Image 1: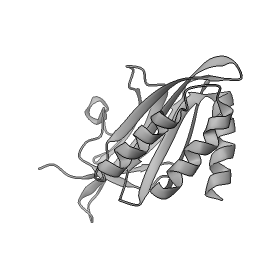
Image 2: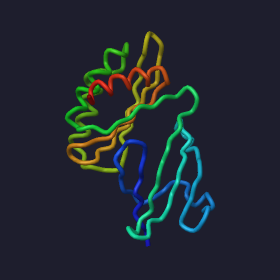
Image 3: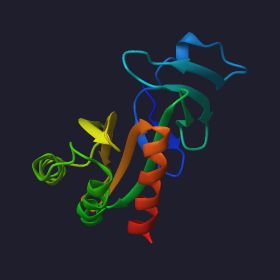
Image 4: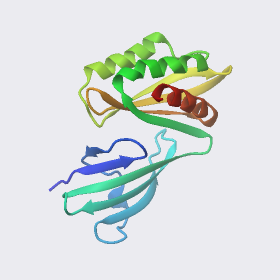
Length: 172
């Protein structure tokens, strides 16, 4: 039998999936309860701190995931109404010297409109520059429902701080 997994990650809405990565590489602390940290590797820039327990009443696993960026890496994220995505992405454009082109942003919006809700994340890496310096930016998007999405932006700490200000302005 395969049980559902409800994942709680920061301030994002919970989502259901069918698997917890690395869970069986860790010994349970007690029956039905694990606590462990792991690194994905393969270009991921985070330590993943996990707490997993089995909820007998609901017959599912509950996973709390806290991602800690490596030194120098920054992440900002939020959940928002899909109709606010354009405004959010447009607010980011003045921060960058390149990379946040209308066509790249329209591709992301088109992808969201044509896909059903899913736990899958769309990753969009952008080659960009911030204050004249080449900077990595990866945008991850999860479509919860037709009207709601989660967005994560991974970049360096300085850029992340500026992006957080823009997110706060748009979501106000």
